[in-house]
Length: 452
Length: 152
Image (cartoon, rainbow over all chains, first blue to last red; front, top):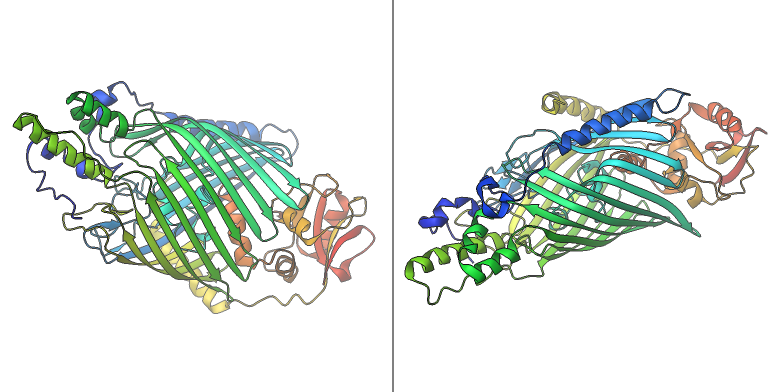
């Protein structure tokens, strides 16, 4: 399938709403004037509030015990990476929340994997606090640091930890540590699984309880909270009633994690398109209700397994995401394995994401409409289908080499063959008129990961 | 935080570190001596399996098998005792151990154990604190501490 070019949309409403040609989450218009979003007031200042709470509570925690001195620790991590893609008509990148990537914007892009994270820890007795900011490319193309973690932990017993503040969601096998490249064998976590999580953090409370069944160690984590993320393009994405569970099982070299999370999601993405659709009566309303991200329940479940006796490892994961919206419903899976030979770790893997919903929609019925209305309706249908084509269907074969060059530094080389399928653009962003789905692209990556 | 200003100097620092790493090389620690995992002689804990010891040192368990709170005490980074202990008990190289703790630290789940310089310091701190667990060369054993696991 060939993607509609912006020239196809050069007339009428679609030309005016060129933003809907942009990939999902990347719409640049301001939603305030739009009917769908007018009632949805964005709550600002949550981030600042969490930050203030994190620091104030940490300071309070530090003074909570009379004896001893609080211990402070500054640490960090980062990746310097560069990525090349053979597809010149779209950008390969690691997250849907990036402005650009490798292929179309640049033949070699430093923005796919490069980032820097800095963390401040304070601890005294049963109390501790953590504050972590991460600088990486955002939707606006800047590296403005974002607050990733900000919470206070109280550990009344060795087996129970309670936290208040911001956490990265512990969904999938490693969503909460995926940004720390040093901790994973590959250059990045598989984009099919981790590239498009609808929510990735929660501002609220969580509890982790450790317990045993004989020699098998269990850790059960439950969390509730909300999230309000600035997409840095005039839009926000808001998640209410986040609830979830993450359960980890460990025995010797074997570890497994089961996770489930759910939230009510709201964002103004595509709001102008849905507002226009609603002008077409019941059929338009039905389409808008189905695809608009307004008060939509999203769920993510996953099961992952890791076996790592030291000289080799294998890691596999399966997950399913439901959004009941234009974000689509998908099933994700990957399997990867590697050998450790001295300081070298050659590895290989396969990942895929499949859409569990159609990635196109017939849209408004146009038969019988007056020609002028039918023309606008046809453009709206085309716009809707551009949005739906961003529901990813994709598979990737990868192979690479990790070299632990120094105690805190890993250097990685990775080659991938990525195939967006079924007419979608897969996890690629910025598709251009010449982009064609179902055609494999080659991606080469180099990364230097460090921790300090 | 002006993280961007870090980005300028970081590559040079990293290149220097990289060059250093390449020169020094990656030599496996010999650690031929026999190691013993010890607790205070006042700690009634029974003998432990390697898996139980590993869980405490990796921050995955906070108690001895009898339920008492347990606090791990490490030897210094780069010491043969430390490298030998983790290789035998967890199968992890220093790099893998660093990766493990990076994951724990940057998800706020925990901090690595405190370190003490050498067998005598570890023995003294473990002897003084019934909740501590450490590892020392078998030749450094005395009556103040009690072995709970002997590593061949």
